[in-house]
Structure formats: structure tokens, C-alpha cells
Length: 266
Image 1 (tube, rainbow, N blue to C red):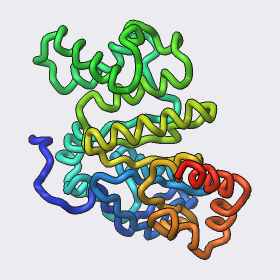
Image 2 (cartoon, rainbow, N blue to C red):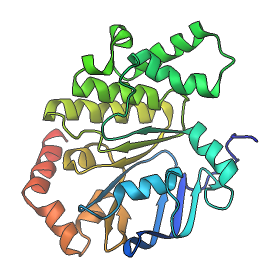
Image 3 (cartoon, rainbow, N blue to C red):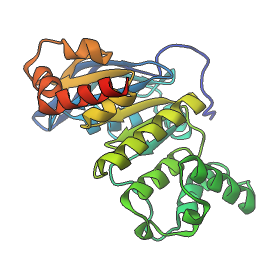
Image 4 (cartoon, one colour):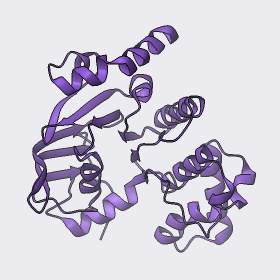
């Protein structure tokens, strides 16, 4: 069964009427979301709004209780067999903790998806491709031989990015990519994401609490609250949206500081 992308220029991700629940606890109800091809979309919301649940549903890692999801033109719910191949082959994911295999070196971690999807490739070619991705993620060649435990937190995140890019995906999913990084490291990671997105033409689905990240690199922001997406728009429009959580989040002290930092750079 082919995992090639279908032709089309519609949204990279299209979600309609999504319902996610855990028993009687409803997390999402009638949630709609479009992610345009080639954009960085930031997904924000308070604790318990289901940001990671939404990402996992889009990736096919959990089955929603209702609605429809299209990923790169493929029906992710009705055509599960084909969707699994398309999504796995054409998406890269960086989870919050990096999710690297602790017993494998960085180069071996990056090689895992290559060996899984292209078992016919010779080992030396796989290694060369892995090292290329490691360099693209901003790591030195010496990082390839190290175990994750020998890396700093920021370096582990970059190693996770290298693995996420292993298959040259069209879609990149990032779950709190700057969590745990100091401001300088977080800013450098933001710049890496934007550089990779522009160079590779990626569509980036980015879950974050980091206001600096939203202002620095996101083309649009989707706000999750009240079990749905309240608004999905450029930041200037989101800031004006009349909802208590939105106003507190974007116009509180941290929001004002992020806006001031952006104005200073402009």
C-alpha cells in the first residue's frame, strides 16, 4: 500500500467536529482546526484543554470519539491503513522529553526510522544520512557517538529534532520544544525551528506555553478553551479576541514582556 502523498494544495491538517473524551470527561467537543501548508502554527491553552490529546489524535495515536481528521489530504479515520503509512512516513515528532532511546547513541537514534522504512539502504549510507540530520539540527559531529545521557537538555532536544527530520517529513509536530531551556537556549531553539521550516518548506504544529516562541516564530496561533478552538489567527488578531483566558494570557505581565521584546527587536 502506497504511503505517497496525494496531490493537492488544501490544508496540511483539517479537523472537523472532533470529540475526545476519557470516560465521562469530555476534553474536546465539536472542535474544528485548519493548519495551512508551510506555516508554523502555535497551539496554546490552559492546563487540561487537551493540546497533546489533539496532537495524538491527529497523529493517529489515539482514536477520537467523533469527528473527522484529514492529514496531508488523507482521511485519517476512515482510511486507517493508508493513513498510518502516510502519517508515519511524512511526519516527524518531537515529544516533550525527546523520547530518545537511552541505550542508543544519537546517530543510532536518528538511524532508527531510516532502517525501519528503508531496510535496503546500506549501513554506511544510513550513517551518513543520520549525521547529515544531526548537523542540520545544529549539533557537532561528535554528538553522533554520544548517548542521550551525555548531552545537555538543549542538545537532547536537538537530537530529537534530528530524528524527527530523518525521513524528510512534510509535517513537524513539536510538543513544548523549549520547556526546560534557559532563555538563551530557548531563543536559539526557536531560531533553529524557523530556519529549518524555511529551508525545508515544513509545516510545523507547535504546542507551547512559551510566549516568546509564539511572538518570535509562529505565523498563526490556535487557542484551545471551552473544549474547542476559540480562535485560529495571526497574533495581532488573537490578542484582540474577547475571552477571559485569552486576555489574561496575552495581556498579563508575561505577555506584555514578550510583546516588548518583539518590539525591541523590530
